[in-house]
Length: 132
Ligand SMILES: [Zn+2]
Image (cartoon, rainbow, N blue to C red; front, side, top):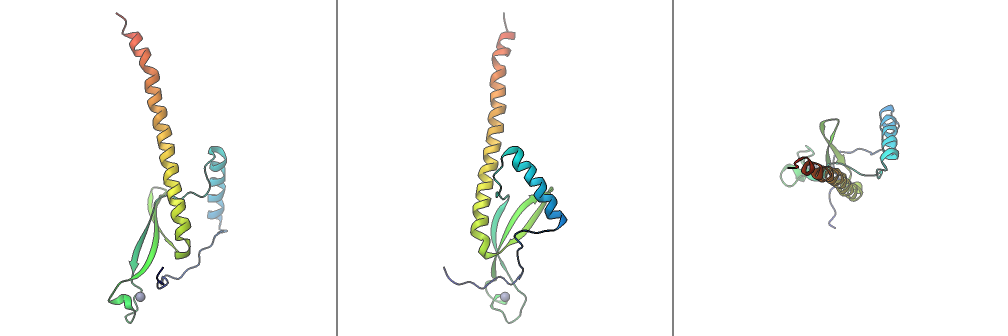
């Protein structure tokens, strides 16, 4: 792979945030994971790459291509959110997004199949009511 300029948006990702909000999220997640046996490391949304400009007038990005950066776009609490993903995390995040999509598809398909089966289960009764 060609060596790329590291993203200019410098930040450190905390793998185990300790804020009260993080604690609440972990507790709620734990309850749901136990209750429904949900795989723990799924991610929602989609991963996309954008080109960002750092704003330095002397940087190559001022005239040419920007610096590549990755974002995870997802819905949380009814709001559309965007989260920067460090290059080192892209592969893991991509796998978790794909696994999350497959899981959501599977849940939707099971629920839809149950609804179809419910409809099929009702049919004989309807026919019985139509007795001549
Ligand atoms: Zn730049």
